[in-house]
Length: 388
Ligand SMILES: Nc1ncnc2c1ncn2[C@@H]1O[C@H](COP(=O)(O)OP(=O)(O)OP(=O)(O)O)[C@@H](O)[C@H]1O
Ligand SMILES: [Mg+2]
Image 1: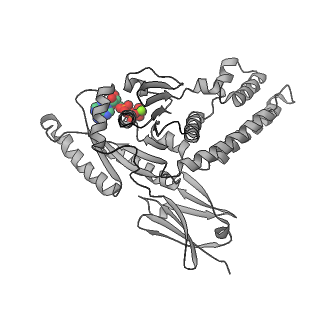
Image 2: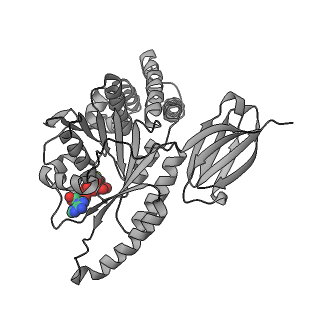
Image 3: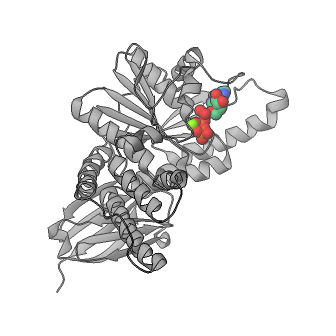
């Protein structure tokens, strides 16, 4: 099974391109699932087919769903939600607020990834296309390859803090519900599943991130940052869709716009090379409905089959070279000065901007000391050597 995750700045055309991709793949004979993980779902509007949190068949080979948090809360997150709700209620909060508070950040995407893991395990589909929220949000959530630890740690911490808070505010232990064994088992189960999800996400034969951009300065800049961070987290970006190009014959009123787009197209070419570029033109009318999406798919992919990975480049590699053990991380668009490195007993912390990745080192590395870090061809090389 292949997974394509579309992301990009708000409004660039992620949903349209994701839907067009899924439609095209289905019509080429691949069993395809189009899944929306953006809380502000619009896949249904794009396809002009009613969808819900349950799987709906759209046409032959094409299913779609919009992950529904309320439904997920009542099913998958029942234990967690039940506990938090009861807890809030015991603190005197009203029912509705308690329920609202039980929605934790990331649950939506986590739920989606659990579906993906199920599909993967059961070979339900040949391809899952994911339409996600704008970059910032998606990055925050997808960018935790160590999701399991991060997430369960936060949940545990939250549960612990809540107990502490109860003691402080009430001054004594009232009927504060304690987390049940079942809940704790659930959390453990969650961690294990998330580790499996991580393996799937960081395998370029399975998962490819595709960035959608428009030829505009702000969009390009945000996309460059996103590209860097995806690399940092070991996710393979295999292509870039430049949407909303103005046709060459749209002079007159759009003459300046056309000129501007040519300039930014050059910037995109130079910046993202050798990443595979695909393009699509601004249509005279809003792009909705199966027929429009089919046209968009033809424009973007030409003769290409969207399921085929366009790059198997692994952003993170570890290898031995002479006396050194080397960790190599692809980090485009940044300078050595932008990176901070720390080593702990068994991991390497790499900090770029506001993002931090903790790389668990193999035992052989962990005993060594990092002695050198250098940039070579867009990759950060951190060299380890036996300490004296
Ligand atoms: N090439 C195009 N030509 C004409 N209209 C387009 C094109 N691409 C996208 N649109 C329209 O632009 C609007 C935004 O597109 P879309 O919803 O796909 O973007 P998005 O990146 O998913 O947005 P959001 O960040 O809000 O999720 C939609 O109305 C869509 O039909
Ligand atoms: Mg969208």
